[in-house]
Structure formats: C-alpha cells, structure tokens
Length: 217
Length: 238
Image (cartoon, rainbow over all chains, first blue to last red; front, side, top):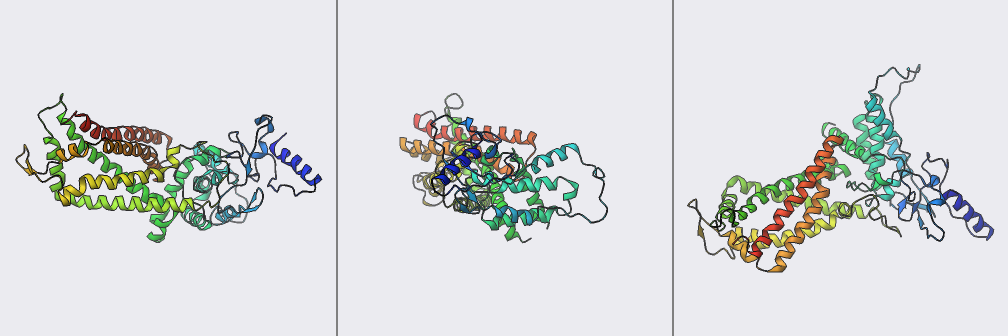
C-alpha cells in the first residue's frame, strides 16, 4: 500500500464516522507532478531518498510506528487546509522569466541547433525539477533557491534560453524575494530531500548568472 | 539595474557576506602570521627571544601607515559582515513563522551550516573581549603597557608579548579563547566553501579543491590561534 493509499483508507474511515476527511494534494501518483507535498516525520516526502510521497510505501514503516505528517511550512506557502498549501508563488516566479521566446511560423527541425552533449545533459537534469516545494520545506530559511536555480540553469545552458538570459535571472530573483522566500545559505538540506535530485551546484550557477546580469544590465 | 537593488536582493546580500567573509579570512591569515611570532620563543627555536620577534612584528603593524589605513578597511569589513549577517539571520528566521512539530535536524545538512548565526554571535562576543584585552590597550589606554621596551632592531615599543602573558594567566581566559577558536573553525568550515559557491563556483573539480583548502584552513588556522593562549599559560613561551 502506498502512503497516499493509506491516507485514502484513513479518509474513508473518517467519512464513515461522519468526520471531515484530511485534505491533501495529489494528482499523478506516479512521482512526476509534484503535487503530493507532505512533511513526514521531519523530512519532506518521507524517509526514502529521491522519492515523492506518492511513491513512498508503507513497508518503509514497522507496525506501531508513530508517523507525524505536516504540511510544508513557509510564509510563502500558506496552508489552505490540513496538508494542502498554496504553491502559486512558484507559478508567479515562472511567469517572471521561466520561459523562452519562440517565433511563430513553420516548426524548426528539432536538431537544427547543435547543443553540446554535456550541456544538454546538465540542462535536462535541471529541467527534471517538478516544483514540489520540498526544497523550501526543508530549508531552514524557507528559501526557494534550488527551485529557481533549476529553472534558470535549465534555460541558460541552452541556446534557446540565451535571448532572455539576463532579464530572466533578474526578474525571477526579484519575484522570489517579493514572494517572501528566504535567502539561501548553502546548507544543502534542499539537495538532500529533492525527489528529483536537483544538484545544489545549480544555485552556484544561478549566483553567477545573477552576478553577471546584475553588473551589466 | 540599480546597485541598491542588486545588493539588497537575496543573492546580493549573500554576495556582501561572501566578499567580506573572504576579506576577513585573508585578514585571519595575516593576524595568525604576526601572532605566531610568539612561537619563536619556544625552547627548541630561540629560547632567548623573549618575545622580541613578536614585539617587532606588532610594532611594525602598529606604526606602518598603510597597515593603519587597512585597519579602517578591516573595521568596515567587520561591520558589514556582522550587520549583514544579523539582518540575514533575522530575515531568514522570519520566513517561517510556524515551525515543524518534528524538526529535520541533521538529515541533509551539517549542524554548523545551520548555526552560522549562533557561531557568528559567539565570535562577536569574543571579538569584543579580544578588543578589550589587546586592541584598546595598544591603541588607546596603554593599560598594562606602561613600560616601553627596546627591541633588537633599535626601536622602542610597547611590550605586547608581556601583555599576552599577563592576559593568559587566568585559565578561564584561556578557555574562552579556545572555545572561540573552535567556533571559528566551524564558522570557517561552512563559510569558506559557501563564499566560493556564492561567487558562482560550480565546477566539481575546482569545488573539490576549494573544499580541501577550506577544510585545511578551517582546522589549521584556529588550531594555531588556540595554541597561543595555551602556550602562554603552560609556559611553553615566556
């Protein structure tokens, strides 16, 4: 039984008893949508490495274990109900610059622009971020820097992301600060809990992007 | 982009911490080098030195115009690092008004990386005591430095070596200095490599190098500093 199925069973029992079921976010239940945000026994997404809550199974626990489940705690993610938090701050950060401009017209051949394999791999690894918010939940400063750096590193390493490279990083950092996330202090807690194993080295890349854009724009 | 916007952004604030932090790390090396002159008095090096080498170094540092100007820059560095550090810590703490029932603890991060504010506060309190012991007497009050001495280079100066000996006669003072050096070691263990990450160092080859240098620096420099009051108290140098 998966962790979310366990909560489904629990909710069915609560409904049968005439009580309110526990509200929680979930969607794909395949570990790719980033909706199932739960802080389980002091760790986002539970005890397994590189894993989302929906892919956590009850075999991770022994009979009689006490499991404390909490929502993400951060001012920028306010709790809507029970375990459901509002992560629209991430959407607004993406809207501030997490895109590339593409001309309309005939579609360009996918292989028309040569991209170095190492860079393509690094960009793809950063693009694996599902925006679940575990990095913010785990960070003592409630910083969204790992999420933001994944988006910036993903686009800035590809030729398609070059035109908006400077404005992207400046606007996205400004939006992140406006949303009320904290500043990164490189503790590494975000990287340790990321279900998609986004590397903290992306934060260094973001810092360099910001430094370069900040002194030249 | 305005400079004020740049330096007040979350990345800009970190940059100020990194620049001032690396500047203070460089200063520590100079400070350690000058103070380590006391070890010239060790019995197996020069038992007749009696602190002369250290006093000559202290005299040079105190009376060279360029170094006195750098002293002002150093104070600016301390001021910015301390003020920005306090502001960042308070601001970051306020970003999660309601904490967790079960804390994450050491799952993924080192305790000293999460405790830079606490370690910095210990170092600030130590710094005030350290200034009270040595910097204020040498620059202003001359308490404990009433008797000038003649150095081997012909100059007349304060006997800072004797002031150190007198200061470190009490065990509690030695203890406070050793605790401060341990705090400094942990502060540097995180701060050294974190500063380079803030400057954008992401290359794994260079990061490994920086981590190794940072680790060695964080152990060796505080250890040499800690050995100074211990050596004075135990009479290894006298």
